Image (cartoon, rainbow, N blue to C red; front, side, top):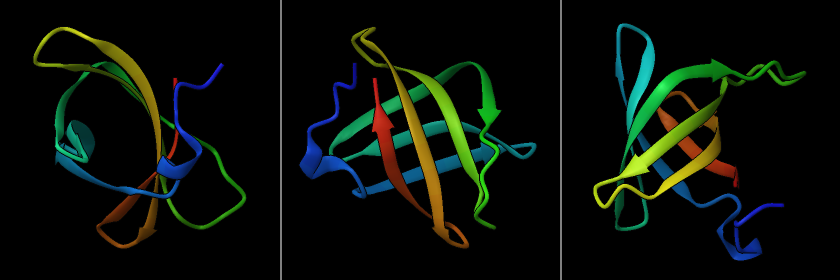
Length: 80
């Protein structure tokens, strides 16, 4: 079951990378830290996608799938 409100799909996400892996994420006004191992998502599209386990500063955990729209520009695909 997705916790993502339908109006949030496609919303802008900011990602920060270290050594090629995402480590931080901002969606809306909320900041998240990537926990565990980020997983690249295999897609038929040429753009990159990641499945990320994240945690906010209060300890709330979630899982986001993000997709690169253009180089360096990311959007939210789904959240659980």
